[in-house]
Image (cartoon, rainbow, N blue to C red):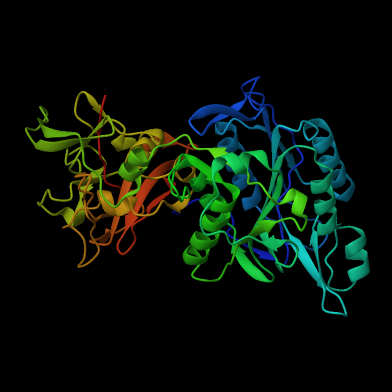
Length: 494
């Protein structure tokens, strides 16, 4: 009974990890990646890149002793989608052996890395390993899907893994002006020159000089969570202006490295330490990779601060029983700002109380037709739209489990929760901890500590999607529950 366990939580052990995939996915727009990127340089529109191409590779399956990494596929799909919105042509590859991995790099560079005015981005995800030699020097390795663990036979491991020096050789073979390599993985940090520029140089200089840049998600032997902080912060950097230090509308590779280092260290509670820098070659280290941001400070300030101002409110009366409900307009959606209290078949008030503060608890089937005329039970997509309206990033809405940052606080009421468990309620949605029944035959539980809400979206004959908010948490939980559970209902206007 209860939540359907769809994804097994695990951790990625990285001594030098990265991510790589081997199924090329077609792009939706024929000209994506082949459109010129134009930026303002000294008040003149200047074409800085003629083409933009990305190779996103991840290893999720390891048959020879390494732990499988289920989260890799989810992460690289998000990265692909984000880069496509940045006008990159993206090739995504999955589960390569050593020969395929080598061929993937060579083929991609030969195909796209010959144009001097192109930009290339490489995103690598999976296991990795650092070998310490007898003289104390370190060799980092990408771990293909077929590589054995180095525990009993380091020589056999090295023969079937890709040394990081191969990546540097590939970087030098690229004729394109700018190349950026991102590794959601950890290693010793002695493989490239650290870059600690506090203030980005002017765009004119950055765009004209060549560069090979590298960003990793952590240091040697650090543990990275399966739901990657590095990945989520990389996406946030490209979809908001938070990483744009000088607020000029452009994101440089140096700004991105600084942002990821600061945020991942903080969000991992100092357990993960990203590193960034440039190749140890003066002629290839003078420029900086450029992203043109498609967002504005004003929009992001509205969506990512700790408050949200609704755009309208009012009251309706349910003609079936004369009960009145407050409503609020959030991002163009009109939601009831109170829990539904209509006495439908297969619905119960908590512990059969006469109080209507928390409304009634409904089975999923009962909830389908419980809303007043002109209103309906919101779908999973409508909940996602609400969440994005109050600041949750689009990629986060697709995750299962706890998602977002402070969005839960924005919709939780000040009252109706055990002491200290409420929120700011800046959205005026007024979510209450009305508790639930695990099935219609079970006892009531969780009032003042949990709020459960049905969506209309069904996964199967037995399970449907729901939302949950917790006492003491400001995130919003998304998962599946058996349909005979009894949850609160909010309605959305047709």
